[in-house]
Amino acid sequence: MEIDTARLRMSFIDEGKGTTVVLLHPFPLSAEVFRADADLLSDAMRVIAPSMRGFGTTTPFDALQPPSIDAMADDVASLLDALGIRERVVIGGISMGGYVALSFAHRHASRMRGLMLIDTRAEAEPEAARATRNRNIARVRAGEEGAVVEELIARLLSKTTVNVKPEVVGQVRALGMQSSAGAIASALEAIRDRADRTADLASIRVPTLVVSGREDVLVPLPVAETLARAIPNAKLAVLDDAAHLPNLEVPKAFREAVRAFVLGL
Image (cartoon, rainbow, N blue to C red; front, side, top):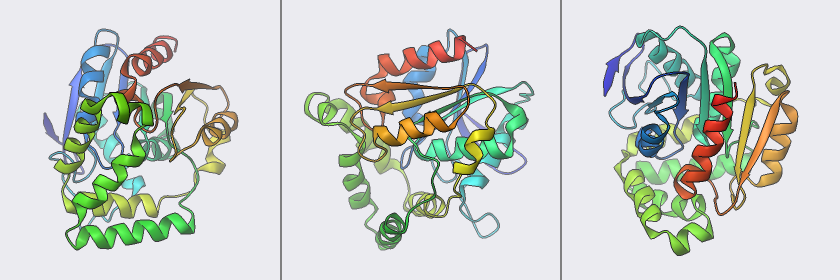
């Protein structure tokens, strides 16, 4: 579905009733990555999953709104306003979605009831990674977005998933290939330039769940452990046989972790 907010037109998934849980998707996918999660968790909570700028049919970044993670966080707040949601919500994000969730926690803390940080980190992009982002932005703008997405897929999924769950590999590939070159390039810029939120972690006052796929090479388990230790009242859930996309790789374990966390608030 779609809605016009005060900031943009946004496409999103909205299922269920109860505590509102906002799930923010990873790069370079869209809200569709949470379609099954929204369906199967909707008996216990209201799941809202928006597509970020340029993904799905959401308004892209432009000259008036340059790419940034903070802008994405403000877009989420604007969506909640447009939907008339005034109560505090649980914000959760995977990877890029986790960056947005941390920005939301900094900019809109009073709207939060809980926080879920899934295979993500608080640090700013290091110089070597920034250089890689720049190369990939140039490649995307030169028409190589398919190759960039294909290379990323190999790092998003665990060896277990690649070896025994070809349908998940196909699903991730299909979702990634649906994303436009403009959305991919803009998201890469936003990720590259994101703020360092490390200093903000100690001030997070809501219950927090940190989720880590044990086989994640992009955000290794020690990074998740450090993140969980830095946030007061945070718990760490480590999911076996998963890497960077645990909701697709081990969906049952992922949903059990989310359900237990939300219902325990």
